[in-house]
Length: 55
Image 1 (tube, rainbow, N blue to C red):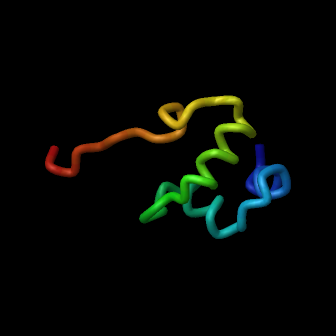
Image 2: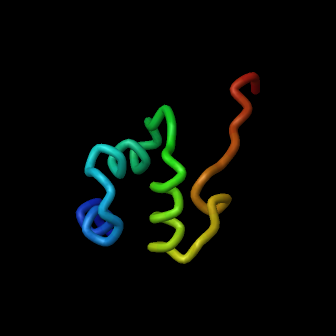
Image 3: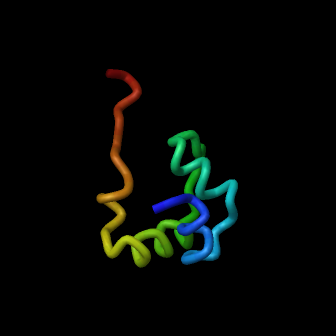
């Protein structure tokens, strides 16, 4: 799915989707997570991964 498709389907802003796609987002809005989970029929844990910065 292209970024443009995600934007059209979710109503999220291009900058939000691009930052998430490139994994450079500093924070994530809960509403954005909800829209993405609904679009991809998944859970938050399917979208996010915890990485310990000390490792």
